[in-house]
Length: 162
Image (tube, rainbow, N blue to C red; front, side):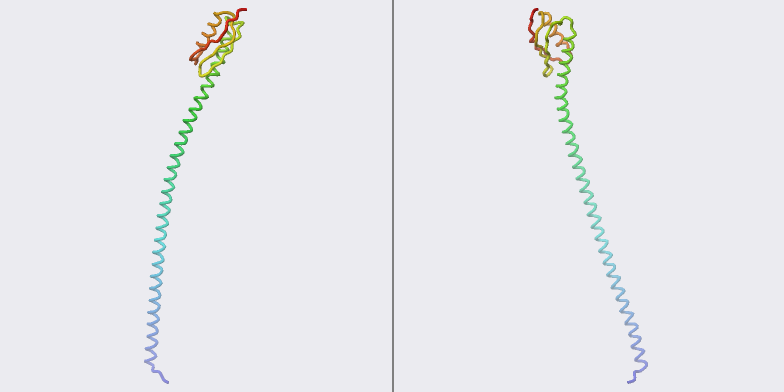
């Protein structure tokens, strides 16, 4: 069989152009798929960025709420500490008053020979024991009344003449 030269040339030209067409179509399809993949990647990245921003906003909101709660708790602690300090300050003041009155009574020459016990509760001084004469009883009460922080004096001293 003999194939004509023209037919052979036509087949070769067809194959060449047909191959080129197949190659161009494959390249175009690859470009389209790559473009679609790039678009999908961009969309995914945009969603990830948006999700990160939302998470950041939620974290900032939670931090603000936590800070507000911590601040409120700190205020409560300060208030309770102030109440405790006030209560403790009352005890310290009572002890201080007792010590001051006891020292003044012990140092007063008019009260020599007396056996006086001093107690303080809520800034009220109670004196009890014995004194040698009525003026000593009045003097001890006056010393207690004149001490800083004393709000009242309960004089339970008994005169016991020698």
